[in-house]
Amino acid sequence: MWAISTEQVSRILSMANEKGIPVTPRGAGTGLGGLAVPARGGIVLDVTRMNSILEICIPGPTGGGVC
Image 1 (cartoon, one colour):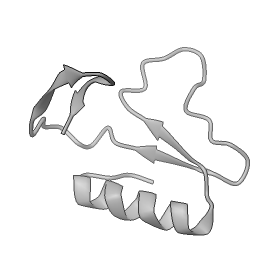
Image 2 (cartoon, rainbow, N blue to C red):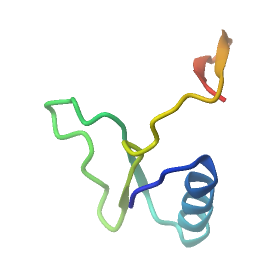
Image 3 (cartoon, rainbow, N blue to C red):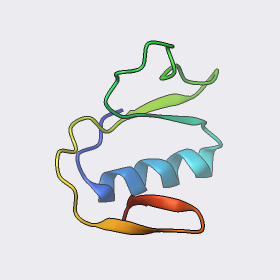
């Protein structure tokens, strides 16, 4: 599945959670280890079409990330 907005990511993750479907995120796809392979019965959530950063969180106890 491809997502181009945070709203789409939220809807996809909510649906997958309700149905018990495992989700494997895929970012830039630069890894060589085949890490974007979903668990059996799961889906890959590809966010490579998301091309802007809305806000960068200052690292806290759990590290940094995009808000």
